[in-house]
Image (cartoon, rainbow, N blue to C red):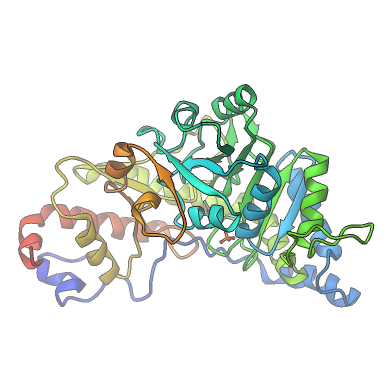
Length: 398
Ligand SMILES: *Cc1c(COP(=O)(O)O)cnc(C)c1O
């Protein structure tokens, strides 16, 4: 329960934290142990631990069904699914990948691992994501690929990007990690563009400890990805020389299946947490909850708020205060990727909107360790910060 009355009650300034244990923003969903063990028994009995065993085959079948798509190719991580897909899809002789800068912190690194060059486009301030129009302004004779990335609440402009791809002949790949459960205009995410990439790292909706997968309706692409993840070894005994050992193993696949069995219940739990935030965030002045579009399927996984004009405490100070209360919170995609120093080349023009948006958003505690009463305490803390802003600001060195 929240019971602070003055700034010195904040843990940051010597009070005791609201929570004894950390409330994270990572999902960390824990599937039922019996299901995990039952799936694990399959590979244990078969004495096959990796190399496309029965559990992994079942996982791929179930995921393809889940996404309404023909093929699912699993990987040891989302990272390698993305690298391999880019390797396969990039137009030969060209190097640039059009992608947003306000996105997942490692996405430019992944492009560089694929031997390509990120070309950052602006994002739309309403959706916080890449649009066809923003992407089109970065397309040139050196564009090898368009990387549509879904933001962490709702989806990006799928149909617009598909039209741009059709019109320019530049292949379209999606990073759909954050939209794994969603639909776009009623169509399940998973069959859009040439392929879509997903992660099953433990902080994502499906917890496989680590893992990832690529979905596609393209038979040839799926076949090549299957060879590439398996050291590039082809059925006929020859090699794809950019292959790597990036296979999913059986125990991770068992965990993923247990998580998949639980996903609708998990989304229901996420929905309740989200509704609690939706009810309470309007009690905090100068703060707006980024709303899920409930006319579509939503996973309700992430809670993002905007600090509106007039919010009185610096975002970095809000973060420090929340962390001291054992409430993990992160700035939403900050710094933007073009603002980070890297050893590889990147291309960008005017990214004003991105730079402004990178300052404004916060992700709040959610996922498996947060219940509805916790949400009340988090929001009470935010209200408290707003109400005592002047006294709090005085305590931070300017
Ligand atoms: C986590 C994440 C990835 C990478 O997935 P890993 O399985 O951790 O390699 C890629 N894109 C986005 C948007 C992510 O959030």
